[in-house]
Every structure is written in C-alpha cells, then in structure tokens.
Amino acid sequence: MRRGMRAGDADAFDFIIVGAGSAGCVLANRLTASGRHRVLLLEAGPGNRHPWLHIPLGYGKLFTDRRFNWCYATEPQPGCHDRNVIAPRGKVLGGSSSINGLIYIRGQAEDFDHWRQLGNAGWSFADVLPYFRKAEDNGRGADDFHGAGGPLAVSDLRDRHPLAQAFVAAATQCGHPRNDDFNGAAQEGAGFYQTTMRNGVRASTAAGYLKDARRRPNLKVVARALATGIVFDGRRAIGVDYVVGNQTRRARADAEVIVASGAFNSPQLLQLSGVGPAALLQSHGIAIVADMPGVGEGLSDHYAARLIFRCREPITLNDAVRGWGGKLRHGAHYMLTRRGFLAIPAISAGCFLRAHPASATPDSQCSLALHSADNIGGDLHPFPGVTGVCVLLRPESRGYLRIKSADPRDAPAIHPNYLATLRDCETIVAGVNAMRRIFRAPALAPHIAEELEPGAPCDNDAELLDFIRRRGSTVYHPVSTCRMGQDANAVVDARLRVRGLAGLRVVDASIMPTVVSGNTNAATIMIGEKAADMILADAKGAVAAAAA
Ligand SMILES: Cc1cc2nc3c(=O)[nH]c(=O)nc-3n(C[C@H](O)[C@H](O)[C@H](O)COP(=O)(O)OP(=O)(O)OC[C@H]3O[C@@H](n4cnc5c(N)ncnc54)[C@H](O)[C@@H]3O)c2cc1C
Image (cartoon, rainbow, N blue to C red):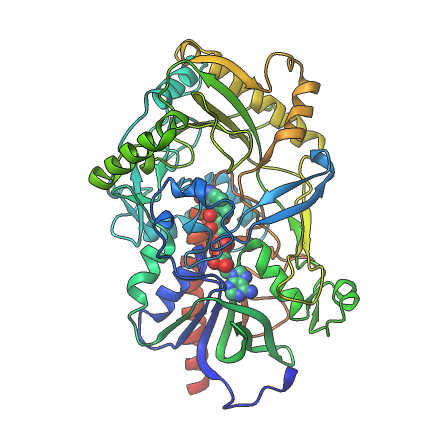
C-alpha cells in the first residue's frame, strides 16, 4: 500500500473527481443523480461567485487574474521566435468553462469518425451525437442535431453587431456559403456563433451542472483543494491526497479515482503520482507505479494568427468602454437588459473554410472580434478597432507536458511545439490570406480604415509566416496529453480507464486523440456525459459480479 494508507483514516467515497471543470462538473452531477454513490469533488480554485465569472465580457478580465486562472505560459516555442506563449486555464468551480470565450462549437463529424477509425469503439459521430444533445438546452429548441432541456444553456447572440453582419456578408461575397448552424449538418461557411450563455449570462458547467447537484447529500465539494497525489494499493488507485490551506488530507475512493484536471494538470497529477515516463519520474525522485511513456506526450493545441484593423466608425468595444462615461452607460444597459457589449462573447461571427488545397473539410476558423489590443488581455486600443482571428484547426505539430519538479505547486513544462510542420505553416498562411480577402470584400472594406497588423509591408507568404510566428498565439484548446487509444503511447482505453491500472480514469480534454476542428468546451462536456454513462454502467456491472 503506497504512502501508508490505512482504512478508516480518511473520508470514504465511491468516486473522487479531481477537478471541477468542464468535465468534472458534468461527472459530479451525473454520478450523484441516483443517490446511490458518494462522490467527492476536489477543486484547486475557489467558488464562482465573482460577477466577472458570469458577465460574458468578464472573459477579457480573467486572462491575467490569478484568483481564477492558473496563468501558465509555454516553454519558449521554437516555432514562435522562442516566445513564451500565454496558456490560461480556469482555476475555479467550472474550470475553463468559467473563464472561456463562450463560443459553442463542437467540431466536425469527421473528427469523431476519425477517433473511431483510430480504434476507439463508441466514439464515432453517431455515437457521440446523443451526448452532445443530452447536454444541451438550445434556445432554438431540439432537432436532429440539437437538444433541449439539458443542463448546458446554448443560445444565439441577442444582438448582431453591424460589423459582425458585415463580416458574414463579406465572407459570402468571397464565395463561402452562408451557414446558420455550425453545429448542424455541415460546419463549412459563414455565420454567427451560438454561445454558452442564457439571457446574457455565462453558462459554465458550474452553473449548469453543479449548482443544483451541490444540494445532494451524496456530493461533497471541496474548493481551494489542491490534489497532490493519487494513492495506490499496488496497481489500484484507492484514494487522493490533497491540501487545503496548510492542511494535508487524504480521501478514500472505494470505486474509482477520476482525474478531470484538464490537459495540463491531469498528466501533471499522474506524473506526480508515479504514472508516466519512467526516466522523467526518476529524474525527480518519484517512485514509479506504472511506466507509461505516453503520459503528457502528444500535446496538441490550436495556434492562431490575429490581424488588427483600425475601423472608421467608433462602434467597437474599444469605443464603448473608453472612459468612465462609456463604462457606466454600457454597465447600466447590461444591468437593465442583459444586452449590449457586456453580453458579447470573445468572437461574434465566423467562417469555417478550406484554405489548403489538400483539405477535404474546413481547416481554418476565421472570426471577428469586436475589439483590438496590442496584447491579449491588455488595454484596448484608444481608437476604433477589431481583430481578425484565424485558427489552424487540425495541427499536425505535437509537443509535450512534463513536470519540472516533484512539487505539485510548481507549474509543469508546457511545450505545444506550435508550427513545427510544413503543412501547418502552409495551412495557416493560406487561412490568413483567405481571412484578409474577407476583410477586403465590399461588405466589410468600407468599415476598415487600415490593417494595422501585419499591415501593408507584409505581402508575401514568407513575411506573413514570420508575422504569424512572431505575433500569433493560442486560442486555448490544449488536448491529447492523456490520449485515448490502443497503441503503446495511449494513456486511456476507449472507456477512459488508465491502461494497465485499476480504479483510475481520466475524463477531460486530455483524452482527445486529436483536437476537434473547433472549440473544445462542447466536446469536453460531451466526454463528461459519455464517461458518466460508462462509469455508472461499470459500477453496476461490478455490483452484479460481486453478487453472483
Ligand atoms: C481563456 C480561454 C478561452 C476559451 N474559449 C473557449 C471558447 O470560447 N469555446 C470553447 O468551446 N472552448 C474554449 N476554451 C477551451 C475550453 O474551455 C476547454 O477546452 C475546456 O473547458 C476544458 O475542460 P476540462 O474539463 O478539460 O478542463 P478545465 O475546465 O480546465 O477543468 C480542470 C479543473 O481542474 C482543476 N484542477 C487542476 N489541477 C487540480 C488539482 N491538482 N487539484 C484540484 N483541482 C485541480 C482546475 O482548477 C480546473 O478547475 C477556452 C479556454 C480558455 C482557457
């Protein structure tokens, strides 16, 4: 028995979930619904009462707020002029769903069919669609692709800003089809995003899944609790060590420990607990429970180019919140109506397009943000401005996540290895060229005074790539560090059980075999929904087997 755990010296539960994020809150709700299972939910961050966690515009405020954000940064990235790229992650009930950009995009059907082709039974689009629908409470109502009545509020933007309308019209002028539902029959084309909000208020998983479930007597939620290690009995996970303030505690899991700490912290916790590449663990003096070379390897993330435009009319967010007068006026408007700039997500309108000639489905997500700044999370420009964001949807480049020390409080080394392959570079340059054409199309061009970044001197592909490397960043979608699969480097099987160990699963964005071609919150919530069904079915099977 590792670290001397004795029966009776800990709180005892059936399931311990580590991390109350997008997936963790789903699990906490679904695993406690029957009343049969005792569940402990541990969250390193605090509760989610702060108003900026509920007002959509708070997204911009939370980038650098260490109260609710781990505020990580990558290692120097060779593909980005050796810059440390910011890597925010939610550290609060709701996890990253409490600080994210509120965009509801699932990815393409082909993404999930590809997961199935890789050998992951039960993960084709046909298999996962019921879980997307189960989660959803779409303001448009239910149809073949959408659900109504689920815990996750999804809604259309109540206001369509004139510049967002111009962006969509310009994209159609460039030949892209108009698309009224990016999560419907096809993703390709231009349109307005649906968002995870209801009546102008953020719909995090803490709000949708946890708020009501917290009243159940069989769910215990401990916030500000940092899990420091998984406790093993041989190769079975039997509990979790965690710290709250200066207090060290241990809890026992009679059925399973479920790691749902996100794509950075899940592999970190496994490595700290002795599950990971043997040489790495030994170099930090950690006793090996299982030599698993794949834990932390294969990190994939969405890199993006951001183009900045000065606008002609003072109708952007930059103008709305300039000075106290503007702040008060828009604040009051929001308080009274739950509309206006405070109810606008990170991006308003978008276009999924095929930029690389070899791509069969959209490889680029081009979007309009109604603000501009020199740096992400920095002060907005003192003039009317918007940002064009072009995301490389299916990166080939892969990196890793590795602990830097045996101390759970130390940030791990995060190396997404952005823009490391020729195809990635070709695709993002082609995507930016396509987005520039949209900004120059007749419907949008009259609103644009000037392209400030990269600007006029940057007119060939080599210069554009250099700009993208120099000024680009992530859209915060790290995945694949505890990849699902059957090969030697896969960490979990198709039921999300850690391979070769008992009583241990990983359930969050880290299990994605490849990143979905879109934003990652919806797919992570789907993973939580599907995992809950599998966990409950396995628990039932175990009881039946014991009784037989
Ligand atoms: C700034 C930002 C903007 C984004 N915008 C969008 C968007 O617009 N649309 C979209 O679809 N996706 C977006 N994403 C991505 C999306 O939100 C994430 O992919 C998704 O939330 C990941 O869910 P998760 O469950 O894997 O991890 P998380 O939601 O990050 O949850 C992990 C939780 O585990 C906790 N935790 C970690 N380690 C420990 C530990 N040792 N002990 C206890 N608790 C621990 C964390 O504090 C956190 O609460 C964005 C993300 C960020 C950061």
